[in-house]
Amino acid sequence: MVGQIAPPVWKWAVISLAQSSYQEATYRCDRSMRAHLLAKQKVEANPSEQTVRALEASEIALIDCQDYDLFRKRLILFGLDENALGYMALKAIEAKAKDLQEVIEIHEIGY
Image (cartoon, rainbow, N blue to C red; front, top):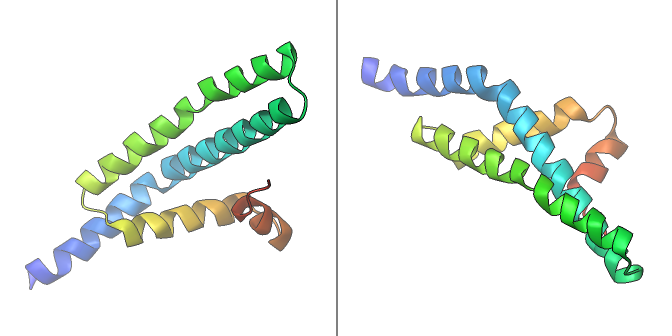
């Protein structure tokens, strides 16, 4: 009986303890990727020293995605699967979105 109860309780405990940190890591990576995409688009539209510097700065900020990925891998080592991580990511998005339009903008990638 303990073998049946322990894994879900363990997952719930890991999710509960890691949710706020995972939320912050998700948000930071998303923000960095979005800024990088916008900086690339600005370089393509208007190549200049200023836009290239902004692109380089946005590439450095992508370290947030490295941190996110490492955190994600640690959570997998602690027993979470893709479904649990997906749940945590959706909770992170919901926590940052105050209305439906923000949820749409978070999920949308502009070209």
